Image 1: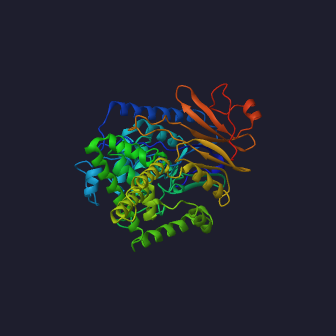
Image 2: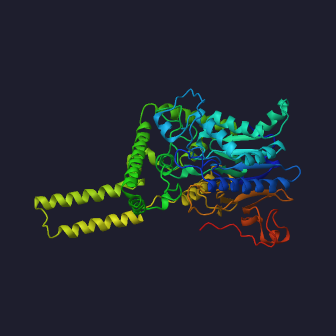
Image 3: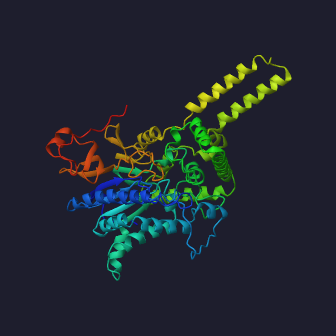
Length: 509
């Protein structure tokens, strides 16, 4: 479904990582008044931002709103099916225990639940599209289930229900739908803009075949990534855990958490953890099976179709896929390394060998305490300093290589929740959009940046990009801009707070 407006006639409004529905986890945690207030605040903040730019649309240049992934947190949700629901894909024991899974029907049910939960925000979006602006949803790792056409249809129907279009006006409804696009990988405006979520550069969140993320074991369901498995089976059922920060947490952090839960809580956490590791191992085995060939063939077919549709060199698209990180679940050792079991296993093995050498008399018992102490110290420092690669550097590096394959003035991603604007090369800038909400189940989560990118065209037609933060009470404030200082002083960017000094784009070091 393509927009009726050619790219050069539009201004652009971009944001990502809203994670609507992340609090719908009735299987894991009960509802609270605090979470309901937080949900309402997200709707109010983002809705007021959309109204702000709706009122400031330029005649002849409608907004193209590009949401760069993780708009809906379908993966993080955990809800039950209604009693009257009838699925062609019967519920598994896992789905009865942990909530609806990733089949096309389940994804549609979850999408409708999010629309009801965030009715105000869906009305704001529907009004914008109904007035002639267009909307692009780029798929992220938390809304990977938008792969299914049923999930896309549920999203469109939710907007149409709130668009206040005449029920008998088929043309108006068709034009409305044409202004809504779903992109499975990236959105590209030749020479100007390249947008993708960025999770494919993060090994913990990457999928083997992003255009065909189906499970080789069960093609009617999505093949979960390492992060998906950890979120669904460990994080959501454990109130003390947050989905944020695994790349910054050490083995000692998790051991301290386990012991703080008491004996019973520690046992439950261990059961969930090793059950999740077992599912990761099964995911690794699935990609070695003969059924995986069918998924690879589907991905290759869709890659060629994408190249033809967008008039892009298919070989360039293949080269772009080679920039992705290798998913953690693609290798057995990478799974154990990422869950930090490798260091623990080596340490325990060393202790066992030391004990055996002592029993056999190979090593004098006098030296055993020193050897044990050495191993324990080694395990301590491994546990303290072991980290998963922070994804920001990987996204930035990927963006730098992308512009040589698909030239663009702005390469835009999300995923990291850290708003930045950095120079890639002369004439190319990397932007990370930050985030609009935090995990509502984590009382200690940092405040969301509420950042968004605005690309307008000046009088000469040159695009000018500004990364804003947002607070409904104060409006937009400039975080970064590629606007020249003299231009900014003479003509402040629309939406900037009065008297606010702009911060130029950060050069890449």
